[in-house]
Length: 185
Image (cartoon, rainbow, N blue to C red; front, top):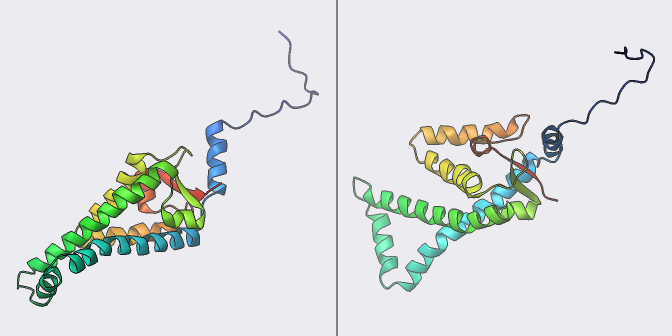
C-alpha cells in the first residue's frame, strides 16, 4: 500500500451531478416577473373574451335570450339567485376555456398564448415537461377551485401573487404543481 504523493497536482473535482447542474441552468433561465405578469395579462384578456363569447352569442342568436338576461340582471331577487346563476355560468365558461384550450397548449407546448407571446414556458422544477396533472390540474384547476372559497379564496389569491417576489420567482400555484416558468429556447 503506497501513500499518496503530497507533491502531486490535486485531482480534478468531479463534475456536479446532472440534477444539480440542470437545476442551476434552469434557475438562470427563469422568466422575469415582468414577463410572467404581461403573459398573465394577455391570458386574462383572452380568457375574458373566450368566456364572454358564448354569452354574447346566446344573447344575439337565441330568440328572447337578451330580454331574459336583461330582466334577470335588473330584477335580482332578494336571495340573489340570478347573480349566483350568472356567476356559476361565468366560472363554467372560463373554466372550459382554460381547461380545454389552454390545457391543450400547456400539455403540448408548456405554454399559454400569453407565454408564447412573451417567449416563456412552464416546466417541472427538474426541467421535464409538464403533463396534464401538473400543468393543468394542479396549476389552474386547483387555483380556480380554491379561489371560489369565500374570503379564504381571496387571501390565497393574494398569497399566490405575493410569492412571485420570492428569490425563486415562483407563485403559490408553482409550488403546488412543482413547476417553474423559464425562458423558451
